[in-house]
Length: 427
Image (spheres, rainbow, N blue to C red):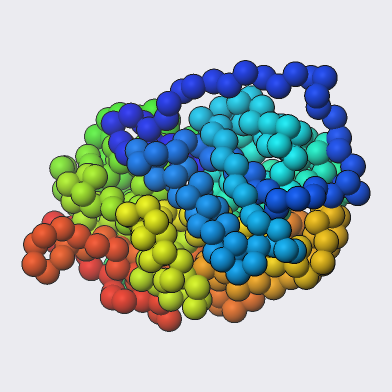
């Protein structure tokens, strides 16, 4: 999903712009010309460094996967190397850096890209270079729609996670249907920030929430640059809604801090990208208390036998737990390596076939991809049961009993829950 909070929050951008690659060095490489020598992983991340945990999680997780692969013999007998490029969330820079990885460095495959606008600007380059790209972050369904319309051209693209924005919305509805009655959220006011990734979410909520037995007191798409939510919260309060049901990233920190300060008489939750960060409590001085968010995983969630060991290994490497993009990027590298081993080949066409038929246990769940004749080809399969695909989990930020901070408590699905939902004490 697309996420980049402003400079007042922890997701800072540098704004640097790279030079465009010379047009003369581009052009399609034959997928029959498989790379040789070191097995190279190209990583496209937003930004790196401690001030951007989403981008840092992508880069460091790919490096962690490479370290673990090398400790076990590499891939097809070759050492694994990682090359990281930053997009700064700028579509043209993203394309330039992608071409540096695939043309100049001749990587085996690429992963990363959490900004939908960057991904869409890369799709034709991915088709031209004919090397597998496994997206780890960007959620727009438009990429899979392009593949559905022209499979042969775009078949080298896969999305390892998160589930696309349509399914992010569907999971919100599934969560609502299973939990809202017990939570006391009989009526909600939907707030979505006006960016590409929220458009499919908005459509699903508009069409399906009422059928799930939830009263929709109102819906509002607001500018992602909003700095004062007072008027918006006045509208939510006036509607009598039990909760604000949100999809926000850019504006998430501003929204939750103002909600906490104003102690509005409604609960707050949905997809809130900043709240997915395990260290978020300290970054906003506890303003996220009692907030609810969808997420890929928490460091303590035993989604599979790989989830917790990965999170602990990442913390050992970086000093902090990863955010959701880290789980996905790690899984992408590991799944691609397994597919290449299974195919006994580095030829991209061979690996595409293996990925299409694979069912791989990752940190985020069972990784399977929709087929070329399905609605969202090469998108990671969403399965509400979690048995035949991946499903997000839901967490609530709760104050620690000893008063020394707060922590993420998984509340759904029941098989992963470590606690239950608590209503904010001021509601």
